[in-house]
Length: 502
Image 1 (tube, rainbow, N blue to C red):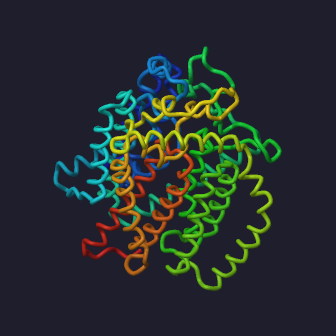
Image 2 (cartoon, rainbow, N blue to C red):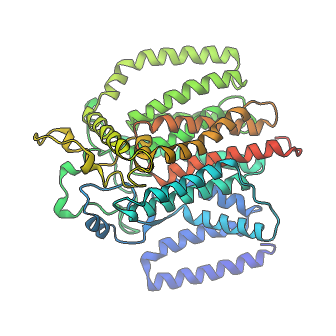
């Protein structure tokens, strides 16, 4: 706002609205005040787009949503033995600032202040959406497929927006600062939950139901949740801890995307100057990552660590002396933790047996439907038909249909076939290849740093979901945001225009 009196007037109106809300509906006051708290700074900051972009990225880690329809009624209508990852349409907290960003972007396009840039990955992603529609022709539940189709369309819209909107060094710095906030918060909350054995929602039921609809009460037993991330296991009965998302797998995947950035921020770079603070963020994130007890994410972390160490030396982020010292420290650390690491990876082996049997089910689906698959988001609906069973009630063969397939790639292959799988993965691999090329510090050092951070984050997540699902809205949105940043960097490098120095 140009005049402070306008801001004061807006504050008076908001105060009156809060007072009326307090008198009429006290429980809605918290939501209203939170909305006003987010809105007021947007009226005063110099760049409202960067403010909403920061709010959007930070909000991705919060599993706060409002379901549009009753999930219990949906489960009863589908008559499923388990619960799919996505089965009800919902509005997430992060969707609200993203809607504001889209409105501002569309206004600029309408007034022709900016031009629409369409990166090549968008056509591949669009082809995936079209193929996913074809896969629903013979799917048993087109409803589930339609919900997932709209989610994937939102992710691709995020990719297109970021590819057009992140066009300055200042915007890139703001994005990476927001990702560091995610690493710090997820690590700190995970450590807090583990240390104080607190695994309930922080605000209880104050703002409504905290759990999405479960199975009907008549069908709920302790055995329904075989893959419970909070279940006790080895290592003295330590529980899998988690951050704000109430899932150890989701928390570890968010950290997989952010920890490579935190590690790069501790080296010689052109984006972050206060490296001691970045070291503290990295330490908190690493401890939280360990306490999630996610073996699949650990594989992704090891792959990203090895690739990042090699690239950091080749790209000049680590000097030869620092690299040798760091390598010695890592070697001693690995030798010291190997005995505990074996106990870490061998806890709750029944989950491994179930996942291996799920992979056999996915292979049977793909063999029967190699072209179109069984339908987007329909793999769990077909699991009982393609699974193997035995007469022993305790046999894991009888349990595979109770949870979705725990491999993102196999589930995608089974649901949309080989062609849909190739279209989806190609849309991301194109940007990974671009990031590899852009990570050489030959031009703008901020661009090179950003390309390398996005590259390592996508590599870590890609390896981590080999034996784990990727169902969380925030994780997928952040992954496509990384792809959009890479596309934006590629557009900037090819524009041939002078860029400001960092």
